[in-house]
Image (cartoon, rainbow, N blue to C red; front, side, top):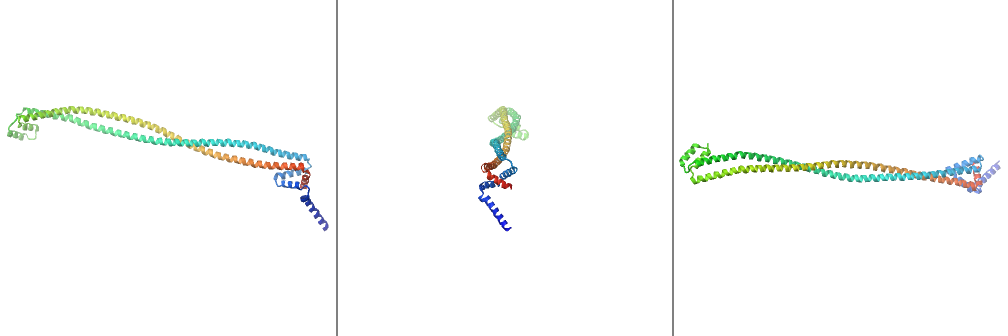
Length: 354
């Protein structure tokens, strides 16, 4: 019994040695065992083993491998077509995003320039309007002052028109009385008369005093009074002419002020119109910049997302291509082994079945 056990161990050891060391198909076995490490290789060997167990003809196995390989090739071709389409889609969409980004960036630049321009225009127009308002106020003050002075001057003129004729009339009375007196009157009699008259009648007192003058002095006084009267009468005429001229000058100044006011008001209204337009343009430029900013943000985020998607597509394509290449290589390796080393392969598969 012990001898039989030892003999069995020797036979088993020799068999193992023949299979792994001195087996004539060791190289084929090594290749097939390496295929076992790959999921597809193991699956193919499982399938071949099942078909051999079911005594399927070799042609069916070859056809199965060919169909499997061609299916992978077709899958790769389809994947390449999809990849080309995806690359075209990526290029087109990224190009579109770049155009949107460029356009939005240009819009922001141009809108910023417009904002700066309209802001500066508004500041200038607001300053101009404020200056025009100040000038209009100055004109209003000047007109008020002119009207007040004209009213005062006219009131003084009317007062002179009343008082000066009265002075002339008084001079006439004095002149008449002086012409009726006799010069060189007795001084004591004159003083007595002056004492009687007192301060109640200055003209009579003056006449009484003049009566003491010599004829020459009395005539000189009369001449002076006549000159004064003529001067006063002329002053009334001159005063009237000056009043007319002053009124004409006043009216001319008022006309000039009104013309300046009208011009300033027109310029102010024009500036206010331009200010309103500039404010509308500024608001539009700010909205344009805001909208362009949102578009830039949207296009930038869209581009980043698309680039990530395209990169994922490329990674998946590369990974699938590599996997199919490996799997096609495995199938071709199995086909080559079956075509050139069928006996060794059959021995390996049979051992696998057993």
